[in-house]
Amino acid sequence: MPGPTCCPGIHQPTVPRGAFTMTALHPFRRVAAIVAACAVLALGVVALVASQSQPARAASIGEFTMAQSGKLSDAEPFGATVSIPAKCPDYDIKDENGNVLESIPINYGLQLRVAKPDGTVPVAIEGITNGSPFDAPKSVSLAKADNADLAVKDLPQIFASDGTYELRLACYDDFGGFHPDDPYWTQKITVTGDNWAVGEGAKATSVQLTPSKSELEPGEEVTLTATITPTDAAGTVKFMAGETELGEAAVAGGKAEFKTKTLSEGDHDIVARFTPTDATKFGPSESEPARLNVRLPRYEMLDESGERLADNPELQRGQKVKVIVRGCEAGAKYAMAMERNDAEFPDATADGSGVVTWQSLTVPEDAVEGQTAWDLSPNCTNVTAVAFKVPAPSSESPSGDPSDDPSDDPSDDPSGEPSDDPSGDTSGTTSGTTSGTTDGGSTTGGDSTTGGTSPQGGLASTGSQIALFSGIGAIVLTAAGIAFVRYGRRNGLLNFGDPSA
Image 1 (tube, rainbow, N blue to C red):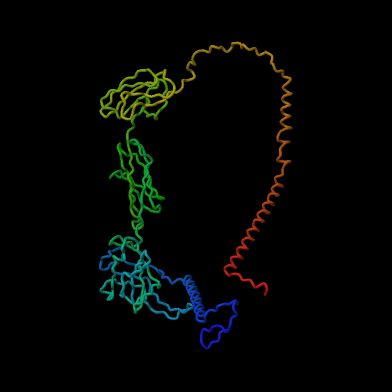
Image 2: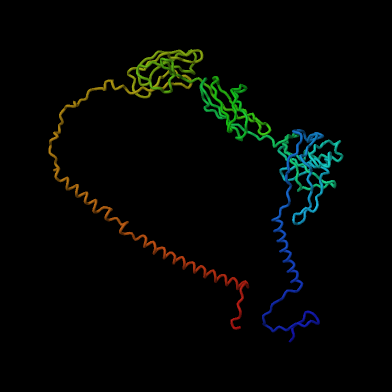
């Protein structure tokens, strides 16, 4: 029985029932698929080429000169003139091999553009034609009267924030053609509000002041160290106590150091003020105040020559000292005693500034060795006692009561008493101990030499491990192969012929 026909007049072959069939793509669909595949391939090639190719980038060929400073709101915001150092370059048209086919002069006019931090390069001034054609170094007027087509753009919008900007001066042709990839002359300015100045601007600096001590006495030396950041900032540092200048030091290696003994009694807030050598490169700065407390000592102890003793000094028995205590109640009487001693000492009265002085205090001859102190009563502010130490008695002092046991007293135990252990047995014990240690010690019985089975056992163990891991690997590979074949057949990736064919 003939099979059904899809179209009149076209013979359709008969297909036996149950036979294997394969549907072929319609010719139109086949062509569409081929075109789509080619399109995808072409897009991939284009993407690859685009990713590897970089457009020509503009490059600076030097600096142009202009006024050193000005205001953006002026009629001539960037000064009266600019000067170019050479002729405007030609625009070269090249073939695919890089050969120059034609050079077009682009010396008709100049554009002043601004390279912003966001990567855009908007025009600031265009229509600068004074002095064209620019075929040599020239000074060009920026006045409107000298440039019929001069136009200044919205500078506040271009310079929207303070900072350093790059100005680019480039040439264009008499058709107004400006080529962004052409070389240009450059200059940098720093904008602060409405003001600008040539240069990258002054870098901000900071100062940290570190005194060698914060508590000192009048006349005591203190070292003031100022650390400048960045460390390459050159200049000087003034050290100020309020509005009083203590001194000045030059910065070297990021530091300036100054020493002074002139601070009077009281509290002082010291600051360090940095002044740069070149204000166009670095800005001035001032440190946070450092508080210095200058105080007379709360108490002093002086020897008979008037020399001040160190805190908690060692005083000899019979030594005389002068004791001064500050912060006491003016006109009040103060008693003096000594710890661990019953000696009596004279009283003293504080003067009008609250200073009480004992002109002479003598350490008693029977002072006990060790730590002690002069105790005053009543207490003064922050002072209750003045500490000192008493050394041990000298060797010439009597040592104390005579010994009850005279050295020539005969011993109750006569030295001639016979020993219970005869001396003849000692050698036997000694030899026995020595022999036992030598024969039964680690020298003979050590297993590290004779029992060295570790190398052989290690080799056997390693071989067993290799065999074990090899077997596991074989099992894993076999399982993976079976899984791959089953997955391929299930998804039509693998076909096997009829074994009966």
